[in-house]
Each structure stands twice: as C-alpha cells, then as structure tokens.
Length: 242
Image (cartoon, rainbow, N blue to C red):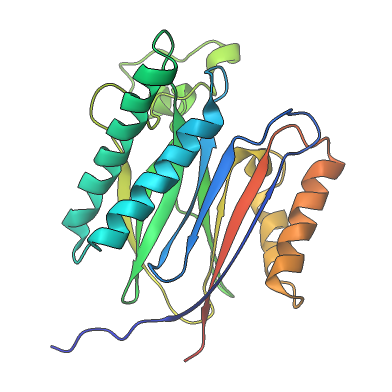
C-alpha cells in the first residue's frame, strides 16, 4: 500500500500580552518544516511560567528535529521527555515550588493529526460541516465529572489544573488522532482566548476571507476588547487544496 501523500499546509501564529498580565508566559510552535504546531502556557500560581512554556517548545522542537516520529507510538515518549525537562529545570530555578506549563499541539503525519494535550489550552477543528473542540480541559471539575469517585471541587478550585507539563511523575497526555482533509482549519489556542471567546465566535473569525494573520489579529483584538484578562496566543493551521 502506498503512503498517503503529504497535505499542503499553511500556518500562522500570534501572541499578545493582553491587558492585565505584566509578562507574556505563552509560547507557540509553528514549525512548518517539521509539521509541528501548538501552544504552551505557563501555569499561573507557579513562578517562571515563561521558562516552563519555552522549555516545552524547545524540547519538542529539538527532539523532533533530531528524530522525527514515524508512527504514533513514537509521540508519547517525546511528550514524556519534555515533561521531564520542565521538571528538571524547575528543580534548578524554582526548587521550592517547581514550574509548569500546559501543552496542546500536534504533528501532521500524512493526512492525520497526532494530537497531544496536557492542561487547558485547546485545539479546535473547523470546516464547512464541522465545529469541534478536539480537547478536554484537564481541570478539577472535569476530572470529577469523569470519575464519580472524585468529589466535585469547590467553586474556586473547579478550574484548577490536575495535569500539567513539569509534574514529578510521568506526563499523562491525551493522545488522539484525527483525519485531515483540504478545507480543514485547526486552531490551537491558550485559555486567554478560549476563556473569553466562544467556539462559534472563533469559527466566525477563522473562516473570514481575509489573510490568516488578519483573522488572528481580529481574534486577539476582540479578546482584548473584553478585558484581555490573560496572555492570548493562537496558531492557525490551514489544510489547502492540492
């Protein structure tokens, strides 16, 4: 059986500090040569989130540059290695508290997206027929909903993350695969965007006819017009006709 020919891909990224934060602790992956895309967001409440997010991005880019995965089973060890690097860096620069980051990103291999997700950044898939969020936030609330043995958290803790990059034990990413086709659009975004804009609003802006960079700029501008409570970062990946 012949291998599926690669898809034509166009990727655009944006990051913005927002209206409240004093630092931008988001990072993005837009490595078109590696077909590697995604976002990382330093976890609030812990120090040095920018360093944690940058460590995730650097680790994955370095590993995949040296040895690109050739099958899905190769993907998880790369995420685990990135988790370990964030943890080890935390032991050096913040031994009392550690550091942590979210990561939502993927490799496009043939006509498939190999998606890895840890935390509360998100990946949306849009096309003419489908509007899907491909990820579920790793929040205390969702963990309790998915496991009746776990009590529902208090209101102030319901969005607390139960999985992050930088944990002392093994990373527990959600790993999923998704078929892609021309016309599909993937939007990777941090919670500075998804916590402010609905998926319907995101689709409306993503599917405009203007240039991709302008579409992302409009998304960030709308987020900031509603207070810009957090850093806002997004990567738009478009699957183009052959």
